[in-house]
Amino acid sequence: MKLSSQAQAFVLHFGEMGSRWGFNRTVGQMFALLTIHPVPLNAEQLAQALKISRGNVSMGLKELQAWRLVELQHQPGDRKDYFTAAGSIWELARTVFEERRKRELDPTLSLLRQLLLNEPQDEQDAQAQEKIQEVYSLLELLEEFANTLSKLEHDDLLKLMKLGSGIIKLLELKNKMSGGKTAPD
Amino acid sequence: MKLSSQAQAFVLHFGEMGSRWGFNRTVGQMFALLTIHPVPLNAEQLAQALKISRGNVSMGLKELQAWRLVELQHQPGDRKDYFTAAGSIWELARTVFEERRKRELDPTLSLLRQLLLNEPQDEQDAQAQEKIQEVYSLLELLEEFANTLSKLEHDDLLKLMKLGSGIIKLLELKNKMSGGKTAPD
DNA sequence: TACAATTTTCAGAAATTTCTGAAAGTTAAG
DNA sequence: CTTAACTTTCAGAAATTTCTGAAAATTGTA
Image (cartoon, rainbow over all chains, first blue to last red; front, side, top):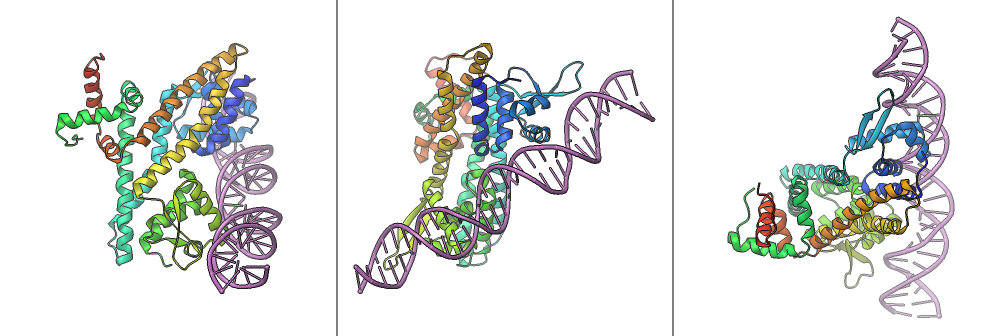
């Protein structure tokens, strides 16, 4: 398990970025390594390549599985578990996007929904309630939009992302066609 | 500085979510409080309301200013600095979105660009290079898309986000207009 | 200029997160 | 059933992050 210098730099960087993306350094490194490495790796190999303990690898793999980012495989005649990144780069990106939406948006939506059920007790509460409603509406819209993007076919998503400022023209176009009313769901 | 029970819950929750959104607990709480509170607050009030030290408030405010999420104000005849959330909920959301793009995407794009300059030294390097190129292309596209969204007028953004699955029809429409050809569904 | 009000800094303390490695658990094969 | 190969767990150690509070710096006012 000798890493090419390119792979090495890639792996270390994803370790450092890890915390910004929702996991810790070693989990980030493991994910990067499994993504860039052409063939599946077992826990021993991961531990050796990243110079971390066997136990740490086990915990990291558990987390990556919870994120649905890695896939377990078996090699005939070998009892060890082998792992690879779960799918293409695009599929991985989608998965990260979806998991982050779940972790970053859902708990907040759920709490705010809860708070909005309470009857405001006084003027102060009522003011807070208003703000909470605003935040809730925005996050809900964001969640739905993220959902829509998640469900798009690869081709459509690509097209959309490549539109650039052309997106404005398209929105105008739509306005003309439908006379200004928003699409049904 | 007594918080309504609603505000209390809101603030505590944003503290807990803080780390997922890129800041720590107290910074998250401070942001939530400044967002939900109807009038500007000074450092002393923040410290008291959140039961944290004055020094911690100072550091937190510095960070929130780096994120461009709070605004400094002065009250006539009072030497203290007063702070509020920088703009409406929508403006704040945009700012968080942009800052996170900067922190989560830019450093990686920059590293990958760097790596792609290196001539692969061997077969292994070449394989890694290919993966790196794939990741780079995707993140670059994502960055551009995020940029496009950032620059949209509020109205257009709202329209886009509300499109739901209508977005597919719009993409088809665009296809027809520009003579592109893809099989209809 | 001197002073008092306020903010910032930062060394060390406290809290939290991550990591290790030995022990316990699991599983396939004989 | 037994054993050996492997994986998981988890208590405590190590590393990292966050927080405090006293001292230093800054700033407006007289």
